[in-house]
Length: 445
Image (cartoon, rainbow, N blue to C red; front, side, top):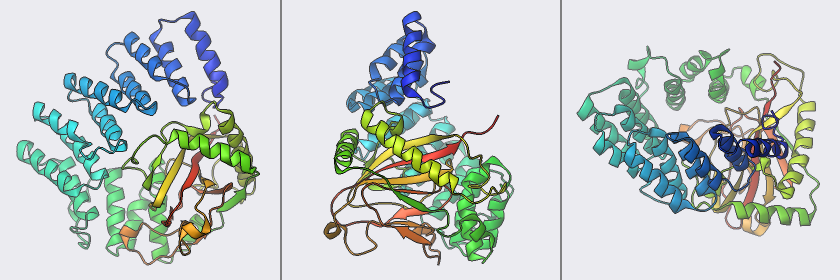
């Protein structure tokens, strides 16, 4: 209960008490490791003990590897997963985890464990498609295309490989101008396929078809993945619902939090110590920088705790000033009482770094708190370094301009709807370091 309420100090005290009473209970050992990891405490040794007590639990071994990597023991994490995959070559989550660790360590051959496993399990179609998805997420189109070709040569075409080929054809640009690319699979109901359809229809000037694909999900939980694309379709069709949904910059606010210079210095030093990875994950928006792993704002660290208090006060102010409730609106329908952090992290951008245009479909309210920013003479000509809202992903090539932007300043917190497109403009030199998080409401029972 304490962990669910994000009272990590209380949660760690409670689980430690349970562990003293039952030190050999595998579930308690796992709970101790998990809460310690989330609270920013050393956890790799605890996960190792939990794995010893829960023999055969590959998910615990995966968490052990993640904790090792987070504590700087990347080679040990790599070796642990590679050894397990020798025994369990069909363990897809293990391959994905190892690929992620190798990616963030800067290994260009990050997906090689899949290739080794497929040699041992050539009949495993799911394994081959998982390999494809990892490569496609990295936008390595030719290797991804080859994986599908070899899967079909060995096992025949299946729905998953057909959809994979369509995805590559659209997203790689190979058939980005073919309006009929997805016409042959209209009978297939699949959320991922619908996202690909919506993107392709927008890209090929078929805004009404994109709208209709997105509208299928209205009233269902899956709509969270489609609001942003529905917004683009409505804007292209001059539909007033675009203003109802986004409101331009109406729901975008910034707060200059009351940090002293010393507080910002301590915070930036704390965050730099957490940026141990070499490269970002492929599925993230970070370009030219790194992103931290653990839930940042749950760390038991007095510097982070002080930041969290300031953030929570600003979020309460933002929620209090929202317009009246609207049961159909993704921002305005939610209850306005308690809230939780659905995720929190830090991003450190190097010169030339930026965030690709994206949204946060699992969030309610999203954010950017600027801790360090390049000096004006480092930044480059305006709008270099700015956070902009409403511009579509550039790969869709849509004639839509941003609604507006926020100029970063140390201590400035931007809050905005999670459904809204946002991204940043590259800057020339210096460092930009932020804290970002998603807020979700505590739903009434």
